[in-house]
Image (tube, rainbow, N blue to C red; front, side, top):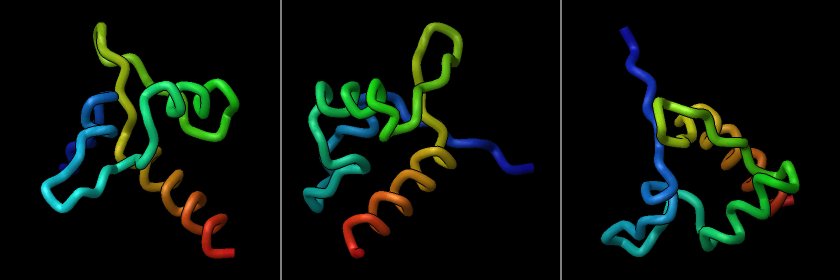
Length: 69
């Protein structure tokens, strides 16, 4: 059984030891992207808003495709 992974806003914006982030933007920019439809909308998980690993992976693939041509 595969257990889905979810990210909170803090997980997405937290800087890793190597300096990388899952989403390399600020919190206000992330919410502007959600409002503009260029970033997936969060899902409600109880009282929390979270993003699924699948949504983030698909976004990153599209984002990197746009950056690389």
